[in-house]
Length: 138
Length: 102
Image 1 (tube, each protein chain N blue to C red):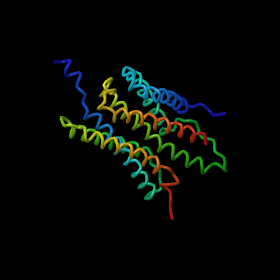
Image 2 (cartoon, each protein chain N blue to C red):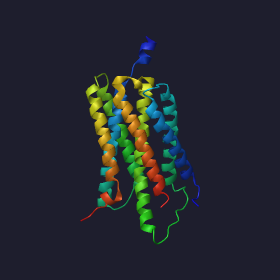
Image 3 (spheres, each protein chain N blue to C red):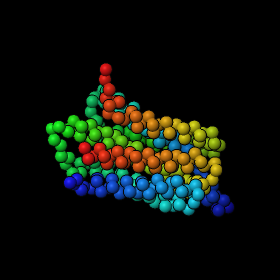
């Protein structure tokens, strides 16, 4: 059984909200008022991910249980997931700036690059969060 | 007058966010690689702080540079740089890649 600690709960919240954000990001082009929902979900995801990083850095998380066979793999996975946590933080932060600047006008034709950037950021953040979750189980 | 001001889009901020994200990701993997090669320690707290500082500085400088200019050409380049930066960061932060020795 995986022990529940603050970082696990925050990571779970971030993963659920990023899944919702990825879906909403695809709908923004057709339904511009969905931007408000997207800003809300991304903001909470950003705060959750920042919480995960803070808990991890200050060592408030659960003590990892490692055996001799998996010790090296666990260390490598821990190092990689802490490095990978930078990605969703930067991407969700940038998406929030873009969405707050453009608001509902992100559905306009000239903003297609920004719309694609937000969709790409959300998808990449979700993938990175899933990888972090898998690596934290090793 | 107020409604005209409110309806303006400050594209310089959005373009600066894209460019700063790309530069911060590049800075993150390069710094991690240099620290791993030189000291073989993972000072990740310092890395987070460094990346946040790089992001803030590049964001402010780019926003100031783009302010009042036509960003349509820069927007396209910034988006492609951002996309490539994500791919490079994902590849170069794999332990098997940055820890590779001959």
